[in-house]
Length: 425
Ligand code: AMP
Ligand code: GLY
Image (cartoon, rainbow, N blue to C red; front, side, top):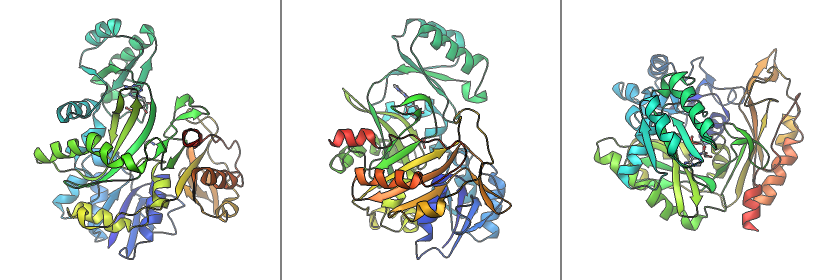
């Protein structure tokens, strides 16, 4: 197989690393990739939003399957454009990608499919949203409809915050067209976890559970990031509950899409909250999580290329999807100031030492090569990922390796996995 992987973050390094282990994969191309993927496949200088260039590259390099890492190319219709060329794509159509690209679409689909989700109302006019927000119980959650780089959700604790959020989204348009509509919904309380599933349009195969750490600060304080660390499995969602939870939070959606003639092929990600009233879906993503992908990939024992092509060819039920019993845990090393503004170009050292810690793989995210030296180029720089018999040993291996890596201002959360360790007692 010839595969073109799209993206440049830690998730894509982990996907490249796993795809490269497949005997089915003859050639891997990465657009654009990062220094971590360089040894695994040729880099093509194409960004993830340039659909015509991605399709052209797939055709010219005689690619059998394209694997988009991030949501943007899917929302922009990469799968649809590739299918016109007869090229397979592990990811959903633009129609299905609206599950992530439009929160209004996702909430309406959840309502139709009978999936538990927070009560909500949709607004197209700022004055109507304001009137509603003046009476809605506090706190309330305000969400811009479209893609907003993970910043489109505001949990308003006061009326003033709610009105300010409505003004920022709908009037000042801080997220551009993503703010043409917004949702006001009930605030839920509980621990969060991620449930992902491979889908071929009909068959749904859940991945083991994972838990992300979105806030930048320890004990979940400070602004939300793309994710400061993740581990799998998450004790809050044990293996024994996976099948049942998939049946209530993912399968009805996949069935509804199939009935509409819109089969979902790829990986779907349900962001769950475990409330006193049971598990609720907060959102869907139409791709792997970053960094959840990193601990999941080190646990995957089966052939990722085979699973992905089975999703594209509607034969997922026939392929093995096996996971290590061990725990995977990823600690993100970030630039100081992230997710606000942060410096770039810091020289990175110690990767070689970190990678000899048993069970550890370092996935690169915001890195680049400058005069042959590895330097930082983004907010989330590295994902130090350990595979070990249990959560406590995975955590200690990941932090041991993380402490061997150096760059100016290195920032990391020290409590990745703590919730899981507390819960497991
Ligand atoms: P989303 O992009 O919808 O996952 O929202 C990002 C984060 O906002 C989630 O991970 C939750 O921490 C929080 N969030 C979203 N919706 C709600 C809600 N209805 N109640 C409480 N927190 C929420
Ligand atoms: N880590 C959260 C996400 O990928 O959306």
